[in-house]
Image (tube, rainbow, N blue to C red):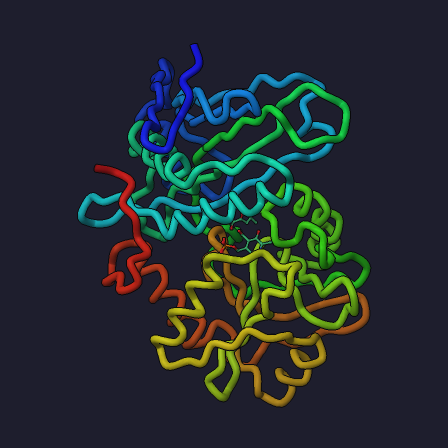
Length: 370
Ligand code: PLP
Ligand code: COI
């Protein structure tokens, strides 16, 4: 039977996993979850069809999806996703961070890939539903662990013509997470891709779609081969200005008190961590500036001391200091105050809000448990 969802009737059926992980097995995973390798006992699915709209919202045991081999996503990459985290607070609250922003970004990614927009209410309710069944999987927050939530949407219709999907599945899975980079929060070296672009104007750089990440894998391999943990992309037109990293935005701390980040030029993901840090910066006496930053400015700024610190930011990475930039033809050494006061101060301010250790003056934290 189909249960159609309307804005005021978002009901999920719940089927509990008959074989959940044992408390011991779960505790062992939560001790050192790493990033992205373990999954909780349940997942959420909601279907959409052009004929029925959003319907059949379910919480079901975590497990493989059944897809027709002709499903659109397998051929033309009709896939978009989000990433956010659930944090355990000392008072028992399980909070998440600015989920409406993720819901709205999923909608804008959907528009770009001609997928249907999931209503914000269904998105937020799906987060609450997974926490209702898998709350024990939210780590205790010691060592900055959290439950990473991965909502995604795929075109499921069996049709080999290239067209907007008429059948779609929204899925939410959850994965306990420690630091994104193995080795913890330490400055990482990054690789500048001179041969590849991540996104061009008019392309899909602003959408959080799987294809962008598939295209980043070859340059990411190059980064690993050169001892770097992330790859940096320049603008596709002039190969002069900094766009972003493969999975994070980038920020520069200047000696004059400016916190500078590349402007949203049309090919950069509108990072929610980026936006939040720009707001926090202002309240910490820094001057947030969004403008173009060239690779030459980075090189000269580090050499002259005008740039003091450089860091990456994103949900998975939080705030991570960056060290050396390497490329095939040159190297920019680490900025003089790498992992310095501003980077680490912003990091502490952000995570204190996320983990409920500090007041939340911006109203960013949304509780997911009742
Ligand atoms: N840029 C890219 C390419 C990303 O994949 C991410 C991660 O989601 C970000 C930036 C940071 O975005 P957010 O802070 O919303 O996680
Ligand atoms: C996130 O930060 O949530 C992302 O999706 C980035 C990815 C590199 C894990």
